[in-house]
Image (cartoon, rainbow, N blue to C red; front, side, top):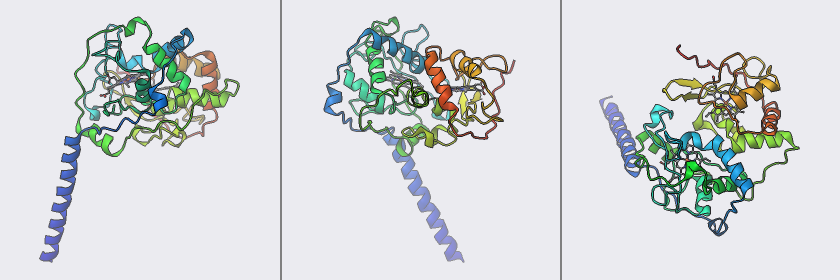
Length: 324
Ligand code: HEC
Ligand code: HEC
C-alpha cells in the first residue's frame, strides 16, 4: 500500500511539474507570433478611394470600429477597454490615425487588408481576442473600410497620442496559445449577396459584417468564426458581457422562440430595437447593445427576414436591471 501511495505521489509531482512548465512556457512565450504570409495579390492591393467607398467605410466603421478606437475627444487614438471581461486583465485599443509613427500612416492597403482578416501584422505579431478579425466580410466592404481609413475624416487626422503596448495577462496568453487562432484568408473572393435575396443578404449583414451572432450566442470561446451557425447557442443569447461600469449585461435571445426569444415581436419593434436601441417593453436596450443607426432600412429588414429563419432556441436570459 505504501508503495502504491508513493507511486501516486510521484505521478502527481510529475503532473504538477509538467503543467507548471507548460504555464511558465506560455507565460514567457506570450501571445504567439505568426509568419505574415501575405499573398502577392494582396501585397499589391491598392484600394481606389472613391467617395462611394469612403462613405460606405464610414458607415461600417461607426458600426464596427469607432466604439473601441475612439479616444475621449473623438479622435481614433485608442482607449482603455474597461468593458472587456475582468479575466482578460487590462487592455487598450491602438491609435489608427494617419500618424506614421504612432498610428497606421505607414501601413499599405495590403497590410491593412491582411490584418483586418487575420489579426497578423507584417512583423508577425498577432492582435489577440479584443481586436475582432473579419474572415467573412465581403472584399468590397473591407476595401470600403480601407478607403475610409485613408480619408480626411477629422477623427483620423494624424495624432501622436497613444497607449503603451498591451501587456497581456496569463489568461489572454493562454487563450492565444491553445484556444483562439488567426482565421485563414478566404479561399476566393467574397461578394455581398444580392439584396433581392433577403435571407442571404440578411445573414451576410448579421453574421459576416456586423457579427451580431458573436455577442448573441452563448460564449465567445465556443463560437465558430468561419461557420457562425455552428456556434454554441447560435443567437440564443445569455453571453455575459460587461458594460463600462464593469457590470454584467447578458445578451438577449433573439431567435424566433416565442417564449424566451423574439418570436412574438413585430418587424417594427425589431427595427426600432436594432436601429435605435429601443426596448419594446419600454426604455432603452443597454450597452453593449448599441443603436445601429448607420444600417440602412433595407439592411435591417433583411436581418429581420434572416433572423426569422434561425432555429428557435429555448433559453430564458435573466436581463440586466440597472440599479436606480
Ligand atoms: C472590441 C474592440 C475593438 C474593435 C471593435 C476594433 N478594434 Fe482595432 N484594435 C483593438 C485592440 C485592443 C487593438 C490592439 C491589439 C493588440 O494589442 O495588438 C487593435 C488594433 C488595431 C489595429 C492595429 C494598430 C497597430 O498599430 O498595430 C488596427 C489597424 C485596427 N485595430 C483597426 C480596426 C478597424 C478598422 C476596426 C473596425 C473594422 C477595428 N479595429 C475594430 C480593439 C478593437
Ligand atoms: C457588442 C455585443 C452586441 C452586438 C454586436 C449586438 N448586440 Fe444585440 N444585444 C446585446 C445585448 C447585451 C443585449 C441586451 C441588452 C439589454 O438587456 O438591454 C442586446 C439586445 C438586442 C435586442 C433586443 C432583444 C430583446 O429581447 O430585448 C435585439 C433585437 C438585438 N440585440 C439585435 C441585434 C442585432 C440584429 C445585432 C447586429 C446588427 C446585434 N444585436 C448586435 C449585445 C450585442
